[in-house]
Length: 265
Image 1 (cartoon, rainbow, N blue to C red):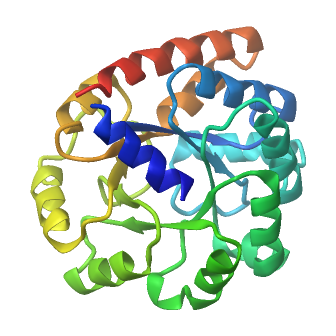
Image 2: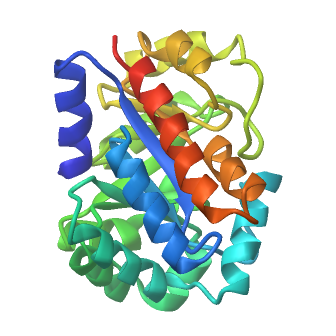
């Protein structure tokens, strides 16, 4: 259980985990691999690797554009996992494959879990899969000794949180706000009370994402959760530097080092 172990060991050493999200193949497969390596070198504890999908309903404009760039380069599950294999030759940073149920089902769930495992990735997060309908994927994940990460939202009922806590063999991804992904200026005031509520229901590690975009946000949250997830802020750096790809790596590296420093408690 590499994801769980990483989060727990970080907490024991006096820091929360920094989880970074990028879309596989954005802006192209070679640069995407370089970005993964840069994340690992500059303080990212866990990498979420998004599989591009033509109907990303949970994603805001920034990640939708990244998905479009990757799809224009014909990136699919197979190519994304080949990228993971190349990354694994140099780095042990835990990886979560992040995506939507439809392309995973089309690929074949058992085949997908087998290929995720053989690529060297450690877990999977299916954005649009309710826990009540997760039996098939849960079975396949357990068969291949992977971790299945579930989303919890501020609108989640106590019953749903309890169900997720029982099913999950990994950390819980807390969506900080209702709606789509995207960087936000401020942390919603209702988040802290909900974190307290969540901790009373589950003892699973909690990583919070959707809208977390800077070290100020990290400082606000680091005494409340076990980790933070940053995606859109990183993907935005890619978008702003498409004409000068060397700057993508440099600016992401600088950003990650700053966030990593903020994760120390």
